[in-house]
Image 1 (tube, rainbow over the protein chains, first blue to last red):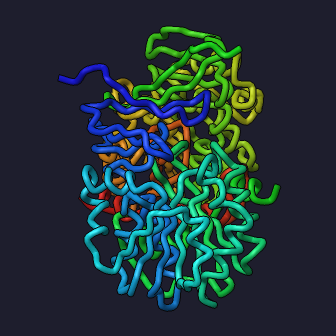
Image 2: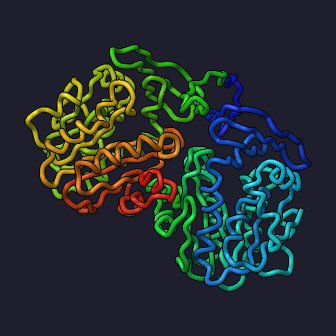
Image 3: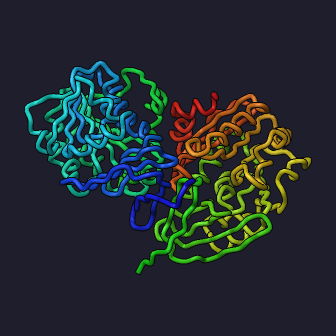
Length: 270
Length: 270
């Protein structure tokens, strides 16, 4: 039988989203954050960081695909990829579907990776790919390295606390220096409905360092409002150079996700 | 101060969405359903029917616009419009932005209209427009009338209980007979993520009676999963014949909303 046992995310102080829990599989207070894994009735297993949904087995592909594929579909020849955050392994899983040479994944909290390996095998599958190298360190420091990348994907938590530096002007400047000439960066930028200032900050920040800046949207039901934004930027052109069909993304979605509702345009114009 | 006072919709038996309440403004058990109006911290005033979000002041325009405008933008000359349900007045408000001659609104529950007039002035504004005529009756009977329309918009509750007939094969047949040659029908069809069978039923049902059937999507944060579907159908072509810019819709959104994520295509192919 189902008991009256719920986990809820307080999406802001006045809105909450709750899921019925089968069991609480894991809980750990790390140096950086609190990690919880629940098995839930509707969403399958879910990973919660500091009380917020990061991953649900039922809809994780929508976010992972839409952070990874638009950039990978746009780059002329993406061989070297840097993932900032993404310790669950999901974005890396999508990137590794391309014939890339190497993927550097910089996750500050090694406990996220350990939890994913223990409980989210469909995401952690990427950690057994020999092209993937994990760096357990602060990405803000990693981006000082003398490296170069074709694609950088910023799969971080929201810009509060230890992840705030990953949306700063200095970070975007450092990221630009790491990118090859035709390089592309894409970052998640939150819900334009619940947290419009976050999307605006990412858009304005990237606009200060890149010639082409393209915001886009996808559905992600388990994230606040179900409406999620991303910003892609490059000093080259951003256009589709190859097709990819996943569980969410396809060539039509590549084009249509750049089309913004009026109220989102107004968020970016303010 | 804010007290710990919440209304939650059970979106299904394992998922709930809660909003902090300032006050419970209205509650009535009608012949058909229970109507509640709350004033909430984040979403403003909300109308709840049988425990489900129908309207929130903060995001109602996303749904109203996306049910009304794609059909109105597609019809060569929309003069006579029928709205099935829509007793809050929101869809009518959008339709009345065009130079239509007449709008018939068929709402079975006159108490919904009364509640909207009392608490949702931004939606009920349409009831003071002389082109709008309200019919308090079952739409399934109304569609036997000897009338003709250019556009029919089905803004009903979901296909359970008294609204089930509005998604039946017989209803679609009757609706087709009411439509002029180039006429267009559009219906809401639920969340493809939470309730895929509903979208599929509307798509298959309309496909049995119309040559052109086009499903489409929009964000609606207060509806289950934030991902909402609609189906538009006609025996003529469906293409954009005029522009309209609202708070959500614009000409780009008209085109992009027809582009479906892979998993939604699979729902319709099953």
